[in-house]
Image (cartoon, rainbow, N blue to C red):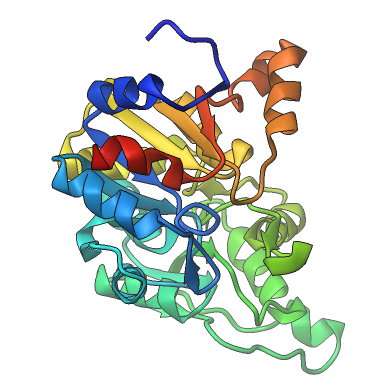
Length: 306
């Protein structure tokens, strides 16, 4: 399709896009739902895409839910979704450790129950989940005992992140043979009403700083997230579109992987940000310029219903 980047997707252009792709990758929060409510029209879009023969997958940087938990949430909100169509960073981290890194040992986990469960489902034992309060003084912290079977440190979202966890991560990562994995680098988690709380990226950066090492990042915009989908379903990048609300994760992932990209304005990023990236002519920024944008994915409904 001979259209410029960052084009509004409307009218005949929607049908052209639908005809040009077989696969849709959707981010979740801010794209198909906000919090515990579906974006109006989103369930109908997803369900009609499937009815029309398109393959739909859900790719999210959120490590606080398992694949099963996401599928259950989608069912409650009216989406026709299968567990195996969900690719979250908890699941993809387990895939990386088991099949790529071929980890032979335990994981020291800075993360929650869902991440722990996905790792354990893959046959990977974890230690460290849950609260870990500070005790004693600096000498006690420096001499805290470690599990000799730990061969990797994994950092995901952890509401119990603490100085003691940071200390233990440092000690494990002092061993250069210990793997270091981060689920994602999102620095803020947006909430309704313009509010936000710190995201996983803050925790990853803290461990990177103290260990003086860089984590292997699993989530968007890392290529690995898309590789997980390809390895299981063999989809063609040229006939796939990434739909998201964040330029620095969703859209950049699509650009990194040779996908078509569609920004929806129901979430984090704004159109003026995309325009600024486009006008910068900076190679590091133009990867965050979407091919198309819509106010909401419900804009696809007329073409799908016609």
